[in-house]
Length: 239
Image 1 (cartoon, rainbow, N blue to C red):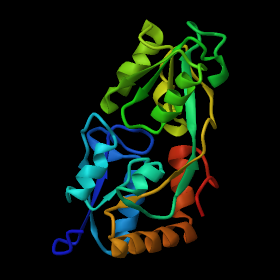
Image 2 (image 1 turned 120 degrees about the vertical axis):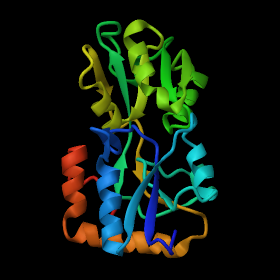
Image 3 (image 1 turned 180 degrees about the vertical axis):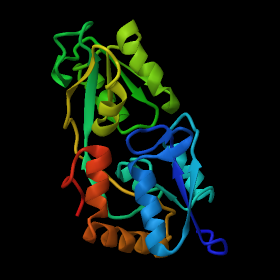
């Protein structure tokens, strides 16, 4: 952390609503409000540092290189990511979901209906290994991997035929399809994933400070309020 400046620099891959987005140019979303509250509890200024890589996993390289102090970007904890960063206690439990254009594929209601179909995912997203496994098992026809910032194209392709389904974390996919005619989230709970803030490997001091602030925000109701406001849930957390 930039102790001299007393700033908490938060790395985030925008847009990924409802976790992070821009509202009239200003950053907004669950992770934005959550980390602002963490910084306030810790007596620090808050700064958002956008990550613009095509592969989400590159955000961990940027963290290691000191571009920011922590990552808060709807980030799922995985064994591979634990090898590259230290994670705080999870603040949310969620899972992958599946969206289709129901006018093109009215019979697709979940992963059991993907035989012969192409599923779109973002590069480095935790949906990618799930779909790769479905393809390997013959339960899906193919995978199409989009650059992380091309999620809009993936959703457009649902209707144009560039892909047949898109898999992504449920709160995000639900938000992204809400204004798209005929595009619906047809299945949720495909996986169980813990979402948490990441810090540089070995930065135990910052991890413990963020976890302490997180406990404070859980105790005073701030976390539940933010979950309800941005994610539509109140009790789905990692306590």
